[in-house]
Length: 312
Ligand SMILES: CC(C)(COP(=O)(O)OP(=O)(O)OC[C@H]1O[C@@H](n2cnc3c(N)ncnc32)[C@H](O)[C@@H]1OP(=O)(O)O)[C@@H](O)C(=O)NCCC(=O)NCCS
Image (cartoon, rainbow, N blue to C red; front, side, top):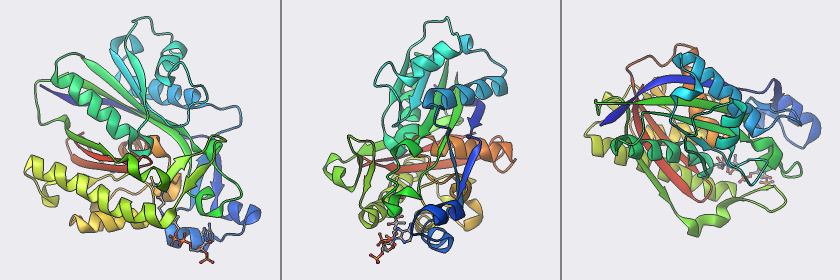
């Protein structure tokens, strides 16, 4: 029992914040940001624009792409770390906005930047158990709400946005979500976390070291489990945290530069939305094509990390 990808969609807020815009408000330079992170610009949501707003638009676009209505879906999972409300879940609020009347299960997963891989992991489990027919996984974040404008080392790193993927149960185990692995280590909490007053607290160099170790480890685990090498994979779509982390990890795994999807220059780090947004972007641009095999590693606060293998 497996699945297949039948729809995708994304949403990016209108406002673009460039490195030059940061130069005007804090002690930083375009050169420093590009050299250390590969980021050039990111999208920021309007003050009144919420995670639910962004998630709903991405969901609508994915449904349109799949030619389905929300009532054809039987589970919604939202990866988010930045919901405006503690309850109810963003997933249930999205169903409300879409006026769904199918009473389906809907819930959020909080895996920080690994959230969308946690979502895929749940979906794979439900498909394998034969419990659901069509699952929508949404990643949506308003990271700008957590930016500490007095901390130049974290303020420039993040962006807002949302992406959505719809998978359908299939008898083929070689399509859709083929495999997933997710892990966590709560002992590393101090490296990267939110604060009660909604700021991002991060030890950059320590986080960097863990990211370049753990993302490739998860990806390698998935490749070994599937009995494949980098030669068999069409694309590696890593969590878009930082270009140096992405390149270092991909090189460790033996991926040539032309097989690495990079959107961090345009979107920066959108946390739980990152990979879903990146994949939707790559489909829209015709970069990743139907039938290709995608390795999908991620890493984030928690610490959490993991990877998925998807035939799109
Ligand atoms: C954040 C990060 C880019 C910083 O790069 P770094 O090379 O480790 O830099 P450091 O933190 O050692 O700081 C080096 C210097 O740059 C300065 N600096 C930090 N942010 C700056 C900015 N935006 N502009 C200019 N200078 C900056 C620091 O103050 C420090 O100055 P000092 O040497 O005078 O003290 C890097 O650590 C990183 O990418 N970490 C992982 C972050 C991440 O991906 N987190 C999310 C994971 S999901």
